[in-house]
Amino acid sequence: MNCALEPRKARRLSLVFPIYNEAEGLPYLRREVERWMGEQEERMEMEVVLVDDGSTDASLPFCIDWARDDARIRLVSFSRNFGHQAAVSAGLRYATGDAVVIMDADLQDPLHVVPEMIRRYEEGYDVVYGQRRERRGETFFKKASAWLFYRLLRYCVHRSIPADTGDFRLVSRRCVDIVNAMPEKHRFLRGMFAWIGFPQIAVPYVRDERRFGATKYPLHKMLRFAWTGITSFSSYPIKLVSLLGLCFALFGFAGCLYALVCHMAGLTVQGWTSLICLQALMGGVVLLAIGITGDYVGKIFEELKFRPLYLVEKTFNVEEEDAKR
Ligand code: UDP
Ligand code: MG
Image 1: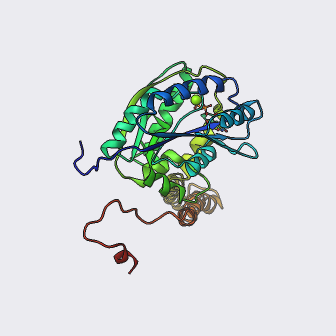
Image 2 (image 1 turned 45 degrees about the vertical axis):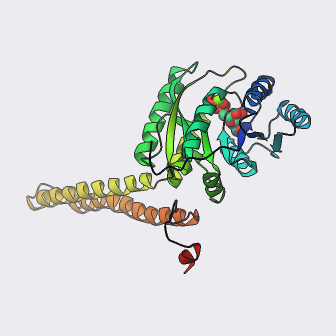
């Protein structure tokens, strides 16, 4: 165990469920959550935050009934579908627990993993993320694209984004507050949690198959999500353009030399050399210029996220006042 960790007790736990057209599976979710909360009642206080992300089926009436029957159920309903990341962000904002667990409403991320997450939280970890050892009942294509997606993210976005990890995780109050205070609109929560740092650890688990309904992440949504992840966290694609520009410019330069040699050897017709020189150089120069401009745009983008410059975890012999000076 990391000796810098400070053990603590979980007093109040929030379970956050984003819900989009999950009517078929909600009775099962209710049964399972009620049973699980019954088992954990002695240990700590509990609440459930349901975020209805503009469902068009019977999900919302079901959630309203559930919230009427049980005061531990808090319900937030969106005016339309704003997407999974927005729904989870709302859940984080409305949760009041000192530890918050983000889950899927289809219970693909099983509840029986949560006690292990709580144990790690009590050891002092701030983010305890579920890491998939196995994904049951998913197509080869989904498994392969997910595999590629996580490796790509680690490579281009942030080394600390753990592989095979979705949004299923337990987060301490202080980290929830930090992420809530990050105003960026293109939210990619798993990247944001990796970015904030603090003690983090994985809990391996087997991802169950979806029992009811279909996935709400078809291919086009998955691709869009992957693109948001890459572009909202890294200027790698722009750097690639600059690199490409540089390569083209170098090739262009070599092309020019070749054309001049041909010209001097009298092997060309009139006008060929100047045309080739211009053509060979311009492509590279234009790409390079786009890359450099893009780099500035990337920096403006970074600034506009208004992220803190750094986050302090601990201080010793330092007063709050010292930082204000
Ligand atoms: N979800 C949501 N808004 C959306 C899409 C999905 O709130 O626009 C919810 C969905 O109801 C589920 C969770 O986000 O609780 C994850 O979606 P899903 O299970 O379809 O994703 P998968 O597990 O297939 O990647
Ligand atoms: Mg799911």
